[in-house]
Amino acid sequence: MKKLLLIVFTVFILTGVSYAEESSITSGEQTADGLIFTGQANITAIQVVTDGTNDAKIIIYDNTSAAGRVVFECTVTGASHYGGRVFVPPIELYDGIYADISGTGASYFVEYARN
Image (tube, rainbow, N blue to C red; front, top):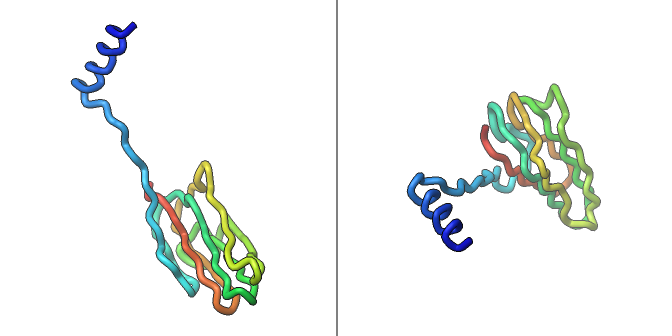
């Protein structure tokens, strides 16, 4: 058994088989509506931050503007301070990522991977 494992390990080393890590890109903290990315992408997470008093609402569109297909909508209560979602598997978008945020003092982060 040990010889078999050694042979398999050696084959992986010699053929260059390796693990490819996937990572996300963040929009950084945003406080206004805006285009996050143009083109195909996968949304991996959305985080919404409130000012502690006022509710915050975010709508994410598969588009380059606030029109077209809505792929995510969420309201976070002000007293919660924070909300959002991690997507496993990620949401696949075809045309772009556009975020529409509303609420006094609201901000958000969109994390995505390019296709």
